Length: 167
Image (cartoon, rainbow, N blue to C red; front, side, top):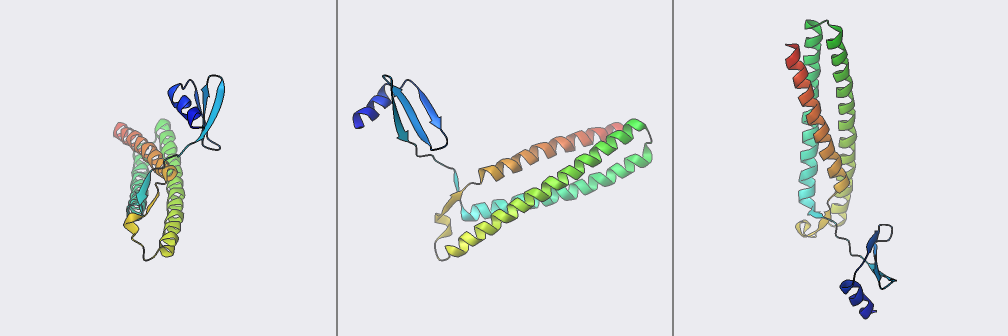
């Protein structure tokens, strides 16, 4: 078997990753050799993960407050401009702000669930050094927050352009 592994490493012609069972298959001289992968997941310490959750929740709270300010600006724009095109844009932004508030609520819920799970894990491990324990980096949640930031930033920029055009 070790000769086959060496042959696979030395004469690798084709690699394919099967995600279902995390194996690598190598084609060497017409023979497939299968090897178990050791997949590395990024990790983070529990206190850092906890701080990060709190930062994300605070950021989401700030965005929700900012949306409330933007909604007040929209009311002022409607009062100053009665043009059909302006009203259509105002309605568009109202709908976008409603959707962003829903996304914020969904993300906050996911963060709260994750934080409760983390707290339960910490209770089970009480007495151990939390700095030495590394947890999954919550890459899916991290990606969702990153996507939210991107979309929200684009929405803010579009709204500011619209607001400037209406003045």
